[in-house]
Length: 457
Image 1 (spheres, rainbow, N blue to C red):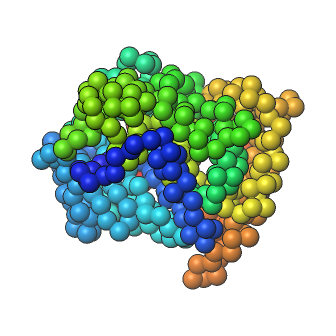
Image 2 (cartoon, rainbow, N blue to C red):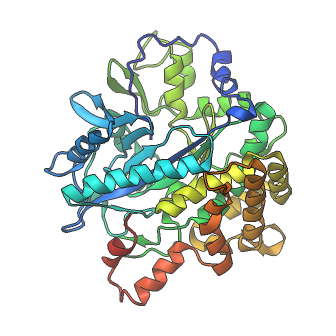
Image 3 (cartoon, rainbow, N blue to C red):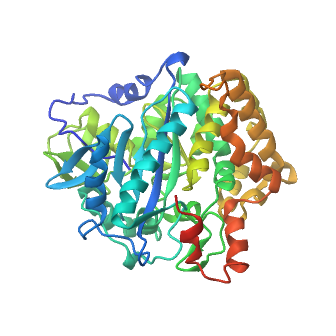
């Protein structure tokens, strides 16, 4: 989740609705300036006993952040606490229970993205080795209850932790027990944004299936392949979901702004502190009638903060965020942006991907979203087919898009090699979640502690 690193004292005040819409149009870039941003989270654990370390304990999360400054990362404070690090490779931040996230820099190609990921993992592993910490690449804590997890000292999270139980049964699980990989991509125009949004939203359940990696809860199988994805089904219906309006005629910046205005607020950031505005209306804020800041109007940064509190399967800020994948190790962190860059950054591939999904009804899209956490590649799509029936076709379209981009590394290789993990899933028909379940019932003999040996970075 986003981390504020500035006070916003000189941020422009929003006087009208057109400024809200302009936040999206300002994101438009010519194709040569389209970039790739990759975010990935991992669970931090003590190698001694597998507990999740607190912020304060000796050798815990605070010590980990301090250790990473040896690589040139600069501390970001909230009050007296270091809550993030900034550097040339982006931002390292903390999720609510100490999950460690890299929000990578905007990069030109996947070779750079994968190199950035490799640097980050080398750094955290080196510091982790000194502290006796390990890093687990799954979509959900396999064995931890909520009560066993620490809370990080961030004001934003205090507000969300209070609010989540009011609006859904699994919001605390989302915050405390899940990890994800995300890809952030650019658009060139409003029409380009709309086509990319529709394709990526329709195919987000396929990404969920291909990257399914959360089949355990509190030490045993949970009956799902991506329990992380299932958790979003009852986190907060006012800010999640498949957004049917995206597929309606006329969809564009204005319609998404109207949606975001209807998403209830969480907070307002002022003077280095988060003010609880949970459940209040940004429309009231726009009119100077926000109860917690009477007479005050929002700034552009307030709108940016508010946009970051909507959690649909695809989210728009000044770019598009792909939000459907479980957390996982290095090859999956490289594979997710490879899939989406291949599908969305070449017009031929984008058109071909739209041809795959354009005839799906909203009911079919919703049924697919609802069934994919449990069924994975066996989730139903239109025409009596299953996701696995189009998985290879979609990956091949992504491959064609990456080939057309022609971004080569020093050895002369293009970006298609980063799809190898997905090729393995398609060829075998098995997700990593299914492979984990096979090992759990087989060679592990029900000992889930083995997952730390085999799925750590």
